[in-house]
Length: 161
Image 1 (cartoon, rainbow, N blue to C red):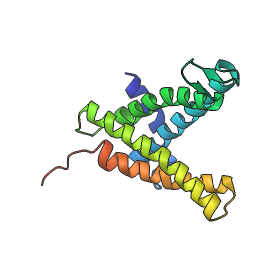
Image 2 (spheres, rainbow, N blue to C red):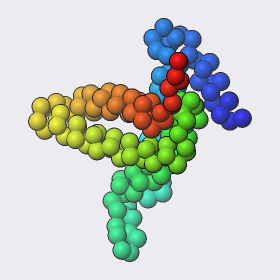
Image 3 (cartoon, rainbow, N blue to C red):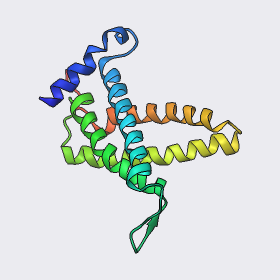
Image 4 (cartoon, one colour):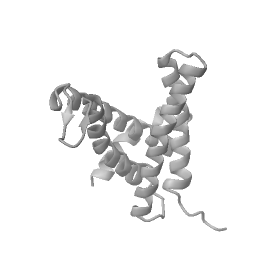
């Protein structure tokens, strides 16, 4: 039921984009965008109101407040992102859920690494302004993520003719 409601809501906004992209790409953009906003919101709330901009000291390890907020936001946005991709965007996948989850986790880890490497490369090696570097990096990483999710994480078996 919530799956159908979410899908219907997203699809309602699709008609103006019909000529620009397929429905799956539109759903990917909508779900990914919404999950990114959720991630930023949870980060903001965690940093400012849960950790109060103070170091989180667990006794055996201490985290800067922004790292603790990053971890908290990741713990929320990771499962939400996975569920949106699995049940809204890539519904035709024939892989088992645990396989999808493992592959999704690997992809997210690779995307975090790619973000770090590309931003560092564009800023430090090419001398780009950090915001421009982030925009270019986001375009590259989101494109990589979409293709990887479509053809690996949530792969669907091809029909034989």
